[in-house]
Length: 242
Ligand SMILES: NC(=O)c1ccc[n+]([C@@H]2O[C@H](COP(=O)([O-])OP(=O)(O)OC[C@H]3O[C@@H](n4cnc5c(N)ncnc54)[C@H](O)[C@@H]3O)[C@@H](O)[C@H]2O)c1
Image (cartoon, rainbow, N blue to C red):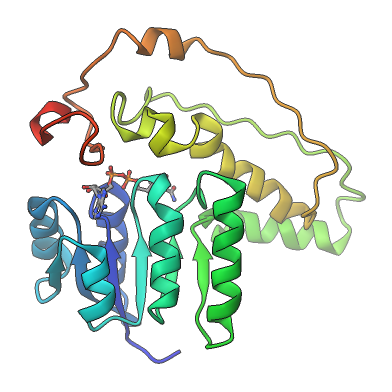
């Protein structure tokens, strides 16, 4: 892969801002294009991390016109599949944020598109970032060396103590997010467990759902302190979901 890799960041919200900042600090990447529906978000990311980047409010235009080798898809979950597939079809490497997408069928479409693009040397990577965590990499090596014996059971627990991010916006709307905590943070630990044990074919899956937050949430219509925006057409003007 030639470096610096020219990168486009599609979605300039909380995680897009982080990726832009990281890419701007690495000698291997240069942010050459930004895309968001909200121009002020692009302006902020440009000022902090990518002053010379071209700016687009339509990702299709970025894919067609911008000087980019790779794109980061940092959008609400329901857009991961269509935008990633469009990126691969446009001949770009794609880093798509987790969760991969919101349905098995859409995930299979992504895998098919990645297979095709792979023949042209393009890569689709899903943002399961714990696979790069030094502790996870070390534990995986230890397990592979046999020092832990046979792994026959992994139990994983994650508690978020900061409440529900983006309450009332796309993040807590099933149509846009796909699901709740499992889709958001659960995917990290499910993936990490399989990664650590190198066990990729679950035999059975079961779940228990607790709904304490759900009924309480219905009373809440607006969360002024939350930064996650809703997609257009969801609840009127931007101001309504700020
Ligand atoms: N890897 C991690 O640990 C991690 C952390 C945070 C978020 N994420 C994932 O990243 C994704 C984005 O999360 P976020 O917190 O940055 O959300 P966010 O709401 O802060 O940002 C999303 C951005 O996308 C923009 N957008 C929406 N529709 C668009 C469209 N059609 N075209 C262009 N821009 C559009 C919005 O204006 C917004 O700025 C989610 O899938 C989330 O799960 C991953």
